[in-house]
Image 1 (cartoon, rainbow, N blue to C red):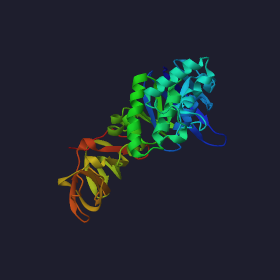
Image 2: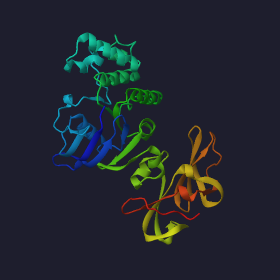
Image 3: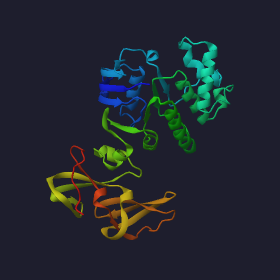
Image 4: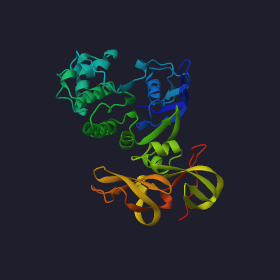
Length: 354
């Protein structure tokens, strides 16, 4: 397996801004890392440079300390699973899995034995005589994964591998891919725009935005201690409530509300963030009037007008307890509130007074 390091990696397209604008990242041997971000953030371009399909404009890629910028894709021993799976329709499942071994000096019998072993690992060993058109989406995804693993890659790259599957299959395959990765111990990088995939499958999540790394760390750190306004708004479902305000010494002014701070801060525009699940209906909180209730299975998501502005809060239960027009009082613990500098988007180390 491989330890992967990116040093000031850049990719610029002719006449366009940089798709990847100076990424520094270290991925330990055997780790499972998710690169998460919206469309156009540079995550897939980064993956293509790791695979050797795109050449970096500048910067360095190393595998176990060896520079691989000029090594062709076939010389990097990297396995890739694309969003489309790209199986050969005229080949059997067995021949599809064996296909990457045609570049290696390996006897047909050995190649077939290896293909059958990896097919059993990904649980498609009973499908080896079929053609891709005879497979379900989940089965095709497993075959594509087996094909990427059969050459025993140093690095496994997964480019939105679950996006073509329905919700039930995505859940199953998240578990299966994680099981296989742990069993093989292969260094794995998952590229996705789906935060659930990233946070449930990976050991560590790297959030990208505008060609740069915004923050990296464990899922809990990204959720509870986001470094930036972008990370706070991108991580979490339903999304965080954000309110424009102004810090004035030891008071935070947000619309009609005046919220005391635990310490004095430099005055200026700020953004207050409160997650819907951090709000509780009770006495003595912020008055709000319910404008909508959306049952979501085990929870109900409410929208309300308040002195802070439009606010969303969650309550457990299948049936709404509050109806449109109901008046409620919403409280939250000081520890759950996040305050960001509006100009820079950086989180401020300041707390709301208890």
